[in-house]
Image 1: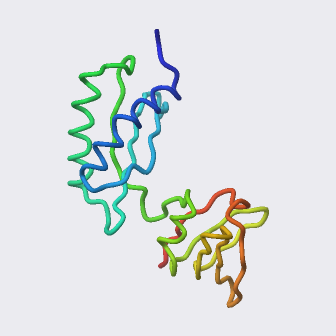
Image 2: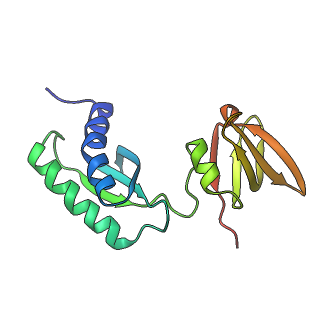
Length: 152
């Protein structure tokens, strides 16, 4: 019985989460998709107090690969890649906004805003951005997508 893409992602997440956490890292995302005609399993890791190093990616890849090989539930050939969310990382949770107070972001609601995170009110779930020397309050529930912007 073959698993769906969603089921594979859920199983990989269940395997990867404790491994990544035990290494002092956070599991940011798991993706399983066709890329350039080949199946790719992407595990994106993060480090809350620092940047993810190449060595972090190598160690996570090694540990997860051992477990995936022993469980063998992913059909056919696939490529495993472990990476960080990147400099222009998406902000998925309200906690991500809190973590990056002071950073330049692009936030899409009905409109698109580009500004600096001034504050995050966790109780009201509101994000305050400084856009063109003016503070704008955005409800977290209105955010369709958001990511850090690279400052040059």
